[in-house]
Length: 469
Image (cartoon, rainbow, N blue to C red; front, side, top):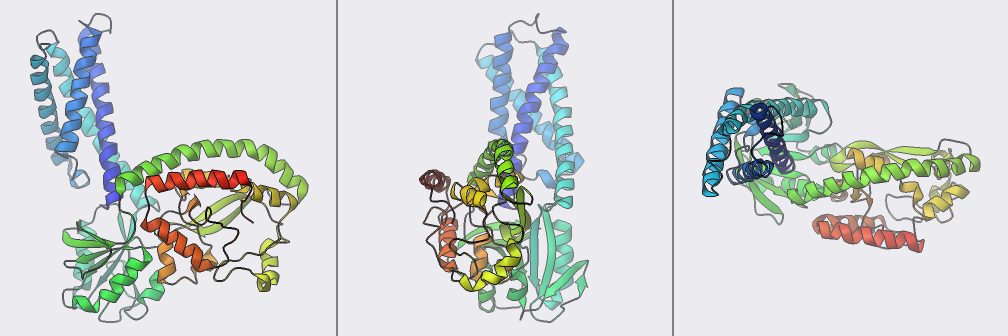
């Protein structure tokens, strides 16, 4: 399991375990006294419950008893939870007697609690495991893994990974580096490229991670391949040794293979979880504001020009995922057709298109662009997880099709509503390479503090009226 999913699951299991303890303790107290009035002391019961929560938290993070949660069979789950129950009960009893409250607290409550907490914890863990299995198998959320190996190891490697990978992985293709098997399938996995056209094929397809198993190919012969994927922002798992690289490396497991993982960009998974929680909060508020604005802005758009209130377009998200971006419509409905006529007036150098006083923009469109009101529907994208509040600019499909490996690394993070280039004189930038440079600067230096700095700068830019041109 990759780091982001691992830490998310760890904290989710901890929260669920805490909720189950509170529920079990409350139910045990009620079963013992048949009500909540006749218990010896409400303060005493609250204190004991708090002790249970604290001890369970120390056990969860100190022992990390859920580190192999996704691989445990039902019998193993029961045994693991049984040990967990024994530890927290015995430790709580010791603390109770140390605080001189053990003799006054009902032992029946603890007995009922042990039984309830054991069965409820096992039940909740099983339901979560089944739910995650369905989620990762049926949604576009699985880690997309590309396998690179040799002819003689092709079938064995794929079969081994299929049996040992965590369920949040999806093998999207394989490449044989010493023989051309392009167009074939091995255990249901397509061979998507040969060594010669590997970069060309992978550049425009969704890939999160690459696993390389080439024991008979010298490491120095693969350095260019590893460096290319690193430039794309794709994590590389090399089995077992990795040539010296400037990026960050860490020892991990892919299936039961030992790998040294190499990646450029951020790997601070705890901070990324905080970033996502903040995105959800802002996404909810922003979506509510969008609903209110739709009444006012929508009427203005309808009066100004015929056509829908909202504009949607396919954009490229993290690591090549496609998604629909939403905005308030600021152009006439034939804008895409008229763009071909205006190509000669393009003021941008590179893959983007921009001209001053674009005739395709409506009167209302000019105002909502200047005030950035047209961007508000993207809060729905943020809530869905397609975008983040702060990130890189999401390219169009046409731009993406022209990317090289250097450009591709800018989509190794979730695209954002705002970002470095938006607060760095976006109306004055006339070179696409400068935008890429700013995006990569954001990726390489990312932190929660940098996100907050960009948010404050964005607010200042909007209030100054220097929105998108």
